[in-house]
Length: 187
Image 1 (tube, rainbow, N blue to C red):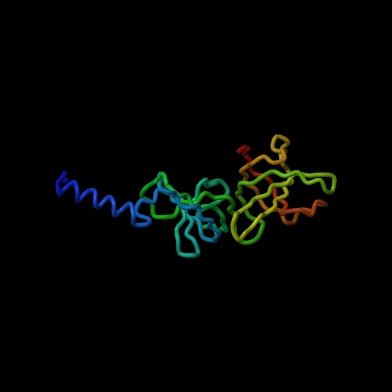
Image 2 (cartoon, rainbow, N blue to C red):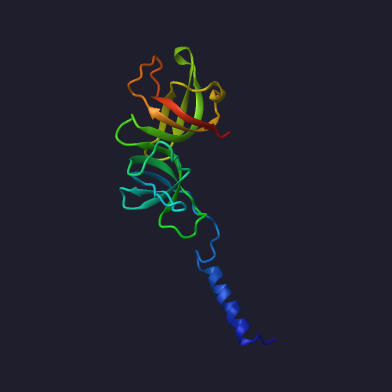
């Protein structure tokens, strides 16, 4: 049986592409951890992406983005994961799922994070929030001075916006004291 030339050519090309490594790879790449600093760019035009202009020269598109309490031009430190497939196919930046974002300088600014509520048994017992950045920032501990009872569930996952209060006096000596501005249960 003789195969017509166009079909033979097509089968040959398909055979080559199935042998060459990487040509038919359909697996998604692993999420990459991002730890960095930069400046917020919050455009005044609706529908334009919010951006972090990273000190590394790259532009990041943060999600979720806590618009309240953070303003255009803020210097921030942030941690998160690159998003493997963007919902916006054409954008001038790297999409990042934010795990932690805080204003610079110091611990007195606003902090946004996603973490686990944890119950500590020392000093009579108290609740804290642990944020694992997955990167060089490591695991950070926050001591809410005013956590509502509805969020006091050991192991629950929350997103929160807080204001750093390093001047607060506490016998707990655990984590950075913060005043909760907004909190949402994610579990």
